[in-house]
Amino acid sequence: MTATSWHGGELRQDPLTGDWSVLAPHRARRPHTGAVGCPFCPGPSEDTPPETWRLPAPGGGWLVRSVRNRYALSDHHEVIIESPRHDWDLATGTDAEAANVLLAWRDRLRALRTDAAQVAVFRNRGAAAGTSLDHPHSQVVGLPVLSASARRELSAQRERYERQGRPYTGEVSDTSRVVLDDGQTVAFAPFAPTAEFEVRVAPRRPAADFAGVSTGELTSAAATVRAMLRALRDELGDPPYNLFLHTAPSGLEHAPWLCWSMRIVPRLAVPAGLELATGIPVVTTMPEDAARRLRARAAIPAVPPA
Ligand SMILES: [Zn+2]
Image (cartoon, rainbow, N blue to C red; front, side):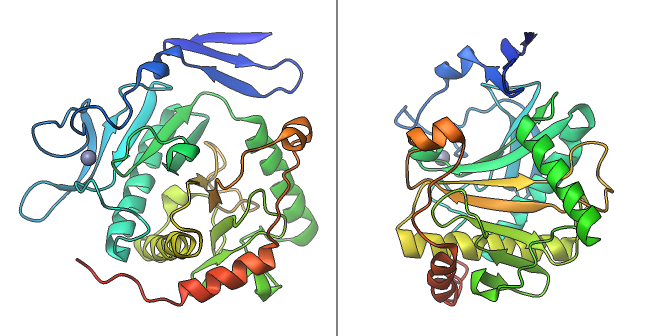
């Protein structure tokens, strides 16, 4: 059995499945919303570990900043505080604000992966999706191992490339599942979704590495993700969700058979026995229907800048 003492806890590998688990008892002590003051809001209650990155605001202060996670899962675990405003949200902010958040994702991914086999970049919204603090934030975690699901996905992508000669970029020949396509980034409901109203976002021009995207690609991806979150919010009433990045692990940044993507997984149902027994999700909304409903919502213009 494989176990390593790791960052105040343990990293253990299941001998049956090869899957890794992080055991982090210190995480149970992290504060939840409802405590006095918000540690991420600028002002007297602000209480964060050292800052690692910031996007300065014109005239002083910051637009987005990254700090070490006080209840870190690894030596490389940061919290990206997405806005000084407690009530800001990625779904209802401006496209420019969304682009600033993805800029932080790209820059912290670049910084943290030098010491990691895999870097997870994600945003949780709502208690059912695992959020413990309301202030808008995302997280970047460098891991010393490549997860079993990442390995599976890498080999599937490589096999697909060998069969078809090009990487999977999210191109969908069946346009009934496309929600939004600006020519640079496409958002679509996947053919075999893992959750109700799952949405994936991928670049039209294949690229393995999100850390290498240009400003133009970043701007397009941010506007697409923001529009999809807004559409989901309008259609489903601010559902809890996880948004996460799939990108090349260290060493495969230039793999021609890989393409980065983002996934938005609403948390509308609790995984039940069949899911846990087999790993096969049961989804009651057809992706074609989800795409049609989100397309109608995405046609609504963006919220104007405040
Ligand atoms: Zn706050």
